[in-house]
Amino acid sequence: MKIVLALGSNLGDRESNLDQAISELEKIIEITHLSTLHETAPVGGPKQGDYLNAVLIGETQLDPHELLALTSKIETKLGRVREVRNGPRTVDIDLIVFGELQIKTPDLELPHPRAHEREFVLAPWLEIDPDAQIPGRSSVAKILAELAVSE
Image (cartoon, rainbow, N blue to C red):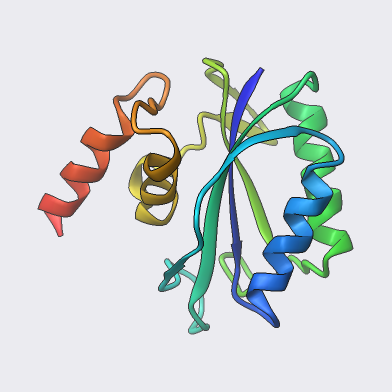
């Protein structure tokens, strides 16, 4: 199944944190595309430093809940602490799209419920997939253009 993951880091050596996360992800999925790093201001939460963000496209045989559990383990292994909502973090791995699935469970919503609002997800994703679509919404290019107009 084709998946899209968004990664971010704003604590410690941000680039190294993302490199380590990607290395760990390569053990559980096949990464087919990886964006460049994008530096972005934090959205929501307390005052904190800027993020480095990237998006990757991959293939997996895992189901979405298995993948979510494994990405959470990677975050923990790399020092992620969940004390403050939208707070700073060593690494954040968000499951954005899982094929065409549209699901909503207590622990997982697909596509990611705020991906269409986040330039730090959309811009790196468009970089690696000009035809990207958010299931149930629209093309990433159209959504990103609409965000630019509304700012």
